[in-house]
Image (cartoon, helix red, strand yellow):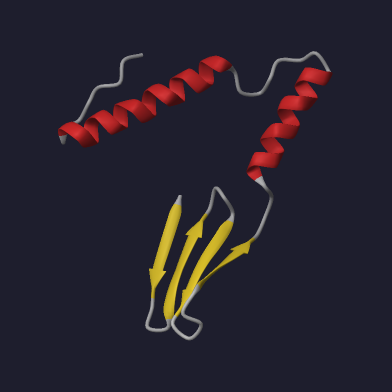
Amino acid sequence: MTLEIIGTKGVISIDAFNQKNNVYGRASGKGNWSFWGDSMNELMLKAFVQALLEGEEVPISGIDGLRSTKVALTAYQSVHTGQPVRLNK
């Protein structure tokens, strides 16, 4: 989820999943990243490695990855055609 706020002195873009703020200021004329919270990539990788080391199921399966890829590809198809596209189960 991304929230963008545009003001008279600059723009701030808040990316909740990546847990960072992009700040573009008129005074500095450049953008800066401000990180906060946890690294979601690091947490997912740690959980994956821990599951492998302990002989448990990984938290996100190949089927999960396949399904999310189908959702993304269907979204691209919808944008390309300009029409809603039904996602097959």
